[in-house]
Image 1 (cartoon, one colour):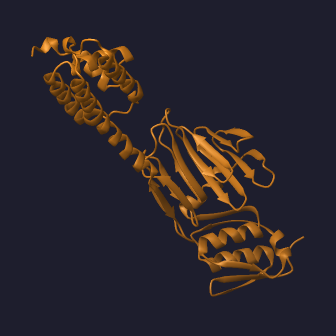
Image 2 (image 1 turned 30 degrees about the horizontal axis):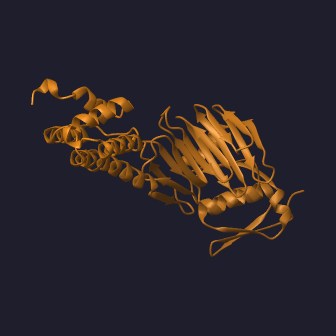
Image 3 (image 1 turned 60 degrees about the horizontal axis):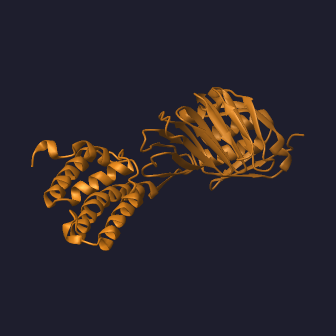
Length: 330
């Protein structure tokens, strides 16, 4: 067959999923006309599948509709013997397009879909930190007592992860696929930036290091810029935006504990996460004491001694249980 008789432009447009319905019909006509045409089309298909990953949607229903119309036309034709097409040829075309071509395409899409549906879960325990690289190249550093759930491969149009605990995200920029972190009722969305997300009990805190971040609970939304943070309370359903101290917010990444006018109750939660202990208050009034300090990779007892000095409390440590006692604070 002469090269000029091969409708290469139609084949290329079809394989790249750019063919109009009329072009698809024209190509189907050509393939159905001759067994040699079917062989040539299969050669193009095999070569194309090796070189070009097909990402666009193939209009399967339209192709089937066109083929079925041709079969109906043949069955109703008054003189079938003089027509260029036969039911056998049409059936062969269905095999070529659907089995050889579309099946390969959907196998690729199914494999990609299966990858994206395979959820990976990374968990850190008390005192443990972990760095995770996602399929898009984004890097996530997990703080202690954190759970991150994410797909093995992201979808073609979005990137979704789920977080409980605290993590710092350095997201690869991708204007076509927004990156979303789901933390309970709050969703944090970016295209490419770095920021910290902390989800502890009923409060979610998001603070931005670089770029711009959007946070929303489905009703209210806020845009955050560098050195800004948003606190969301599940109880009040409100998002409170404020300026923050990034050094303090991100100190945990360098194994530094920072308390900045922090209640002893909140400080106890931090100590539990970092050292794997249980903190018990003998007097609830102690929970209202406020402490300030920076502790760089210190042992638990040294941290407790420093807190004791500033608050006047006493402490004991037995079998990973820290007991705090004293008169407390008003």
